[in-house]
Amino acid sequence: MTRFLAILVAFAIGCSDVAHGMLRESWFETRVDHFNPRNQDKFAMRYYINDEHAYARGPIFIVVGAAEPIQTRWITEGLFYDIAYLEGAYLFANELRYFGYSRPVENAETENLDFLNADQALADLAEWITYLKETYTYNPNAKVILMGTAYGGALATWFRQKYPHLVDGVWVSSGAIEADFAFAGYNEALGESIRQYGSDACYSTIWSGFRVAQNMAHLGLAELLSTEFHLCEPLDTDNDLDVRAFLLGLRDDIEFEMLHLRNINSIREMCAEMEQQRDSSLNALIDWFAREHQYEQCVHLNFDSYMERYLETDFNAANLQAGHRQRLYLQCTEEGFFPTTSESEEQPFGNMVGPDFFVKVCQRAFGEWLTEDVIFKQLKSTNTRFGGLQPAIERAHFTNGGIDPYRVSSPLEDLNPKAPATLIPDTFVSPDLDSIDYENDSEELIAAKERTRTLIDTWIFEDFEPIHA
Image (cartoon, rainbow, N blue to C red):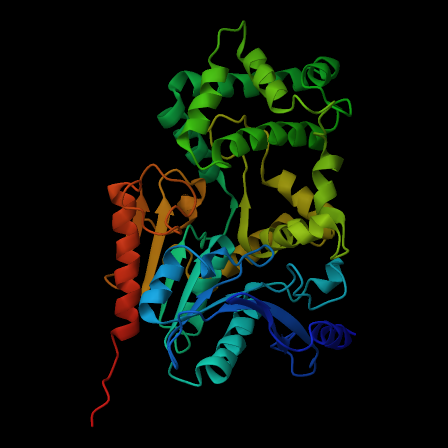
């Protein structure tokens, strides 16, 4: 059936590139299961190409697909695009299996998610890169440079480790490469940013507000909390999952406000509102929350509403197109990165949301087989296979923003002389993807971008052998 679906997709696109100026969409047929010779089913993986600056037989630059529908921005603009211009490189971006329209199975029912893992994705990349060399550059020795962010950055790192003969260098911008279930460092990093760019008073207000809300829930003051926070469904303080989903929802709102504009002024403005004179820290949290949701009649913050985005299985549904269920499956079986609050007191978001809550999330979405023990073993396997924060790797550059909370799962110091790391202060997630801006970029950001540019040039020409007459 999966092979039939792949054929339909290929037929629908006419088995050819779809042109949009210099940017063209295309499809690559690859195996659903690379490791079972009895399963020869195939599916079509979507990718884009931009060859406007490519030299014949030139290098190949690839933006590795992350856990989202395919993104083409960085093969049409930005630092990677600029370097491709200088090097005469082909630019490609691929779509990760199970995301967007790269669908190896009919739907996202749990039994169909067996092929959603790093090893299958890396094998997709290996076959595709070989195909690109044969089809576009006609050069089996063409140099290959990968760039990845987030999960795409992890895949780029792991690909360099597992298939070093197919890639000559990787640039990993804000790539989380160490699996971690109780991701306590994430909320600690958020707390540090609140103190640094907001104030200690703001941190204390949030810390106290969350503790008061927790205590009220323990005391069964459901009606008061439901009314003050304008909850659509009355908070059931006898339901531990509902209480923790409520607290997690408050935390998520603060995180979004801090990070979504990638501007430290967002933190300062949030804290300025929190610090306005009120009779209690809880009221400060309530007033801020009300302004954030001022255009909504009420807010859904119970466990069932939290889970809605993860339960649909139709790939055409909005939540599947956004990748919510697929990302959660990777978290439950490979990555973790759950923002727990019970594992550290060095963060301001209470202490009730622990690993057991996210075990329930995984089980509600995918089944009771995902016990805490299974999840821990899966994440341990990821780090065992790829090295966690100490991957055995050369020709890699790890860059991170100093405010990006995911930086705690990425190398922040040089791994070795051929695998440097650059931490860019006062910046958020992947601050170095844009072109170098000598007027507005900080000195540290300019230096990081120039370092990446120099390293990629070195990787391309390090083993270059001139043709002798």
